Length: 363
Image 1 (cartoon, rainbow, N blue to C red):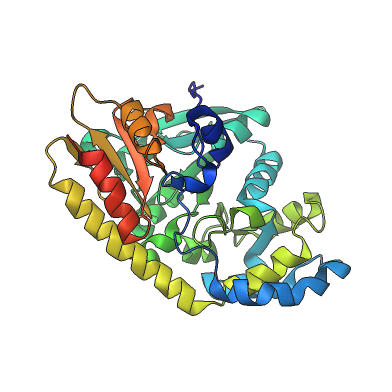
Image 2: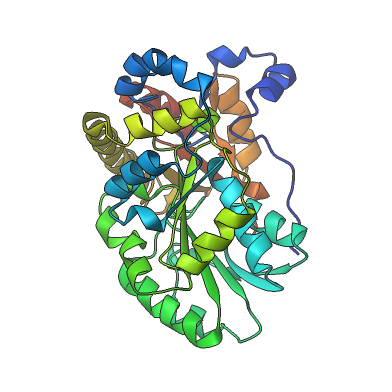
């Protein structure tokens, strides 16, 4: 098992406040990867008008919510399972499949390994290569798949590298996994931020592969981590039935269900988010790409991985410099296969991005 070091999470503003003596209200988190536009304006305007829904139980099948999600994601509502954040669905799926051995492409989010371990399984890592720009070599990867592997976990686009696997390459991976009897779980938390989302998302593939489940949530794109609303998409109806049998009823409260229905239909907000992130991703990448003391990797999501090339400077140094100016970035030395030369930050409004860029690239 990979040893994971402690770090400040993007939600640890209280700890930051205590450690650095900076008020959390004065900290801009470039670490949490949350939409800088905040919550949907339509949600802000109308949710209070729906307060009376808490006087009754929500529909235990969440049909209206699932129909809204299906329309948004481009699938059949019967392929949708909703849960208390994508973490609940990850946990339920792993409890049901109970993988003895799983393979994860790293560096990536540590929660996958934790859940697999809690289920009694072991995790193998396939390392992405820095020399390849952290892009997956599909042919090499599938040559490593074996019959004794039960589960493959992919984050696409990947956190923290911001690289992606196209659905064309994903078909090759799914075919290989099918041959070895491997189930595939794809975390698409950040896919909505991608410019060519239709070339990356694996949702259409759920119509052809029954060894596939896709996870998404509302924490990042819809800036609602406190809502705890996640969903999964799969064409495997037997799996859906099993998950719904195991899942506690009403894990999503009435307000969260209504909020989801509103958010997924706020087309103006969705377009504005995509436009802002696309513009700032391109601008920030081009700005940092010109630097000789830094190396950047082509980002797909709403964040970018940066390598520090100056010998005397570490990721902790940059973290300290930024946080003392009220900006929190991610020290990536805690990720498997990355060291103290890597940082990650998400894209915010242009003026905030300029402020962070000036902090990072100063002599």
